[in-house]
Length: 427
Image (cartoon, rainbow, N blue to C red; front, top):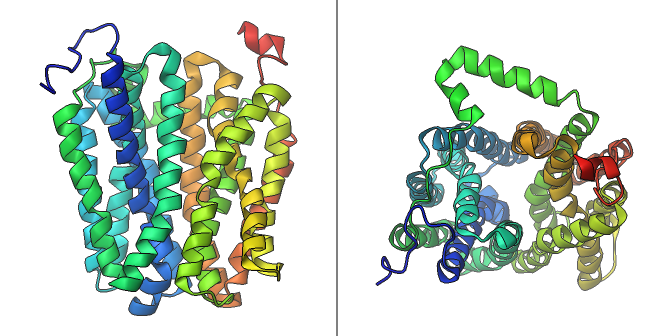
């Protein structure tokens, strides 16, 4: 009966029921994929104590995952485009990252834990783009943007950053941090079975220019990609967004890794208190993404970019120096960390509007890759080294500083909102 209700290949539009099924299953799948990625962040106070890890090693765990996340997103995504298949890559990623979570729980030391996180990044990186490709294929034109936003900002924030700290810390306190890793791998395996059963392979997409270049051979393909990247970076908004991506990705990753350690360390909070505060902050990507994007439609892209980058810097400073009650501190940090809602602007909207529809995907991919390979890689390593040398206060100062510098670079952006720039609308 389930198979009979699925749309057949070649159908003009998927039935509404199937569209909702894809939205729910893939939203849950991405949410729990991000749940697995963030597990190390929230379990770090327990893992550090048990495995005697340094702050530099904690930072390296985040850096290694960020690098393989970026490389996997690009190369496996290209592979999927080249052969025109989505579902096999999606299922393989779900199974592998679930087992990587189990392997994290089995880690006997830093080496095995690092290997499991690096492998997880490689398969989770392409998960979102492939997941979104399936969602877009199953969605009506009038709901494609909405469905993508629900999966990426809605399910990702609610499950990966709001639910995860509460569930994982409770499991760690009740059983052990290893049990928390084991349990976090179960939803991905269950959802892989449901996706295999109830979601079909979308129609093969037309062969793209990027897919055609993959047949040129490694050397020529790399040269072609570098040439195209160089051409894109000549556009003022693209290189500014790339720099902002380095800074804001670094700020976000450093905060995600070292705020829990700071709360349970110098602040002296019990892990349960830390988990609830981080759960509240975990709502910021969803709330901020909607708020900042909505304001940018009305005020232009540039003013919210400037304001919210500066606003994001207050979060770590409040964690460092606010001496009032924890609920008040949480409220201040929440109001500030809504600033990370600028990510859809500098990673998506501004690059797309700057270059037009024909080059939008390539421009967005370039900005994301530069941010992950620089800020996502170097940020945690630098933060960990500084924490070992000067204390856990140091990475939080770096987190704030990166956001402030991003705000200054945002001053150099050219406005791209079509309502305010007629030339953009005409293009």
